[in-house]
Length: 217
Ligand SMILES: [Zn+2]
Image 1 (cartoon, protein in one colour):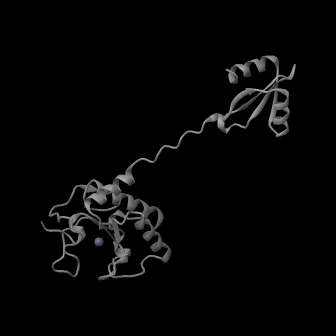
Image 2 (cartoon, rainbow, N blue to C red; image 1 turned 60 degrees about the vertical axis):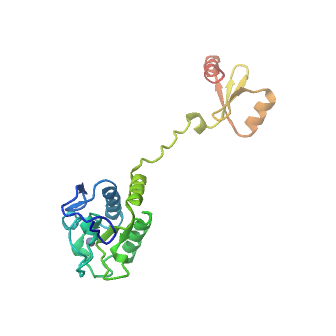
């Protein structure tokens, strides 16, 4: 097997993975999912990605090398907005943009490397490539594409302020709180709750009866 620089097999024909962000292809499945996530965040947080000048698979050697296959050859590298960030040019992003790129890349579990951070050879600020194993890339893709945990619906009663329900005709009362439930109050409790600032709702006999049916089951 011929491998590209990162150890992934070289593909002599275009892989099947399509990305809305680029002209060309990448490996389908987890690789495409990781690049899609990366591109979505670059586009939203760094700069708009122009698909006409953004590329993927290309079966070629690393530029300047006669022996090492580019990671583009295995469908595991992409270039975004190539003309604006030519290979070898440093500082094509503002410091803030570069910091954002690094923060995004850092959030990807060590699976993605940005060409702007190359320490060997010319920097390549248009370029992003996978440096993880297939298992690492699959795990990251699963994390990125799994739906967020559902937020529990707030219990309606727990959002309501506690209240004292009082029958206007004779002062009979009970206390309602979503968390505690409802209970009948004796005179001492009633004074304590009223003193604590709990609102009292005075109801007609009919209204009180209805509230009793609802809260004091
Ligand atoms: Zn590239």
